[in-house]
Image 1 (cartoon, helix red, strand yellow):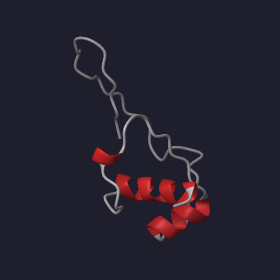
Image 2 (spheres, one colour):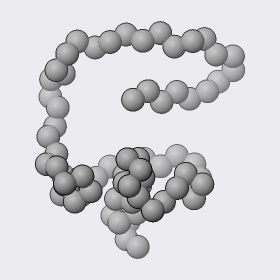
Image 3 (cartoon, helix red, strand yellow):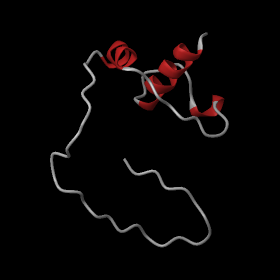
Length: 73
């Protein structure tokens, strides 16, 4: 499996379409794919967003003890 194919599988996993699972990945995996791979995976053309469609929303996260990473989608 090439690096590009692995990245595509990771991207598919993000959407629940891939064959990899969180149990098979250890550590942080940064993911960058090109527009062609995005189209192969999603079936849609990639469109870069240059301006937000709405104003940003401020979110106050609850205070946590210790150090953690937070992923907000």
